[in-house]
Image (cartoon, rainbow, N blue to C red; front, side, top):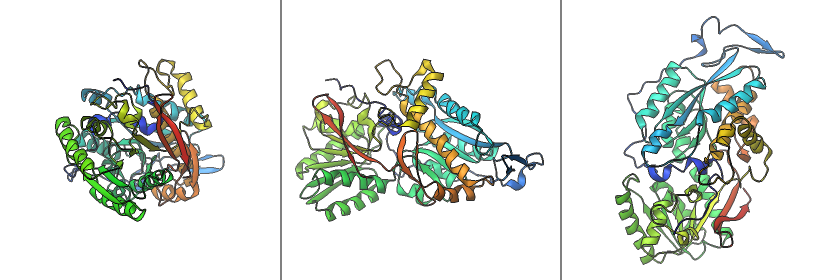
Length: 452
């Protein structure tokens, strides 16, 4: 049975998760993307050359070389993108199209409008394999040591790879983090701005959605994921909320090993059945998970924040429409482009006008790119950079950038109609929505919007 046409580009994170189905959330402790031998050389404004130290005045604002990567005329930023050829070699064609162009169009719009307080933004691009810690470390070293960028935009997977910038190199990061843990924020010494939610706030969203559906009190709830500490904490919350009992299963199989993963999931699902599970929470991806339901003739509602159920290949490992009907997808803002959210529409329309060869569509067909999420993600990151760096003022440093987050507060950008940030809150998405299966359309498009 083939899967129904799903909303493949519901939001940025949906697109970013497309390749994760094959690559997996492999943060099992065996690797965290860090090499203890990597050396990061911090560079301060004292090392700027004499020419950069001169000042310029733009609309009565005096600009100077205030920090590494910041001159009187420019702000140099790094952009880390996935090597799509490396992802294709894993058997997944994510259909993103020209990632660098997504950012180029957004940067061009910013610079043509005058830049940030008169400074032009200069991007430096690095492409990395999503399963290569060496690639990530090398890009970090090149951007910080060789290019001396002020901050970095893009995607990191696993999320701990971002520590090379935010823990060891005094370099803020803005973008999307995958295989995220709360420690990603706790151990960063400078801002790591994540366009989604932290695990703690994600779990709060799941609980709110389940309680709204009367799916906690008196229920036997299973939790599946890879972070045992997070799951133990979630178990306590569920029991306090009235769950009869909680069955936790911690994944250990690497998702690149599809056979091993399937075998492990079969054992877990048999345990769910034996213990009378009535509600399931999946904190990992759903493709192999739902396929295990299918193999074991097990069925119970599934609560998940993994957007791979919005992709077209969620059923490739053996799940069918019957398993999709079980899913309650807890996400963020509901299709801001389709709902007419002005910053999102402006971003997408600009892209489509300039790149008619790679048009971004809300509901792409089989032969279309699934690039709406990456396009709006690039816009979000560039727009947030402008918001925070402008609030930091002409004396742009990591310290002034961090302090300025309190001034940014609540905001909206492309892809994020409802968001907020502060010097201590770095996961910015605030909206909560729930999608479930709609029998009339055959799609995951019945939507309940909860208060954030």
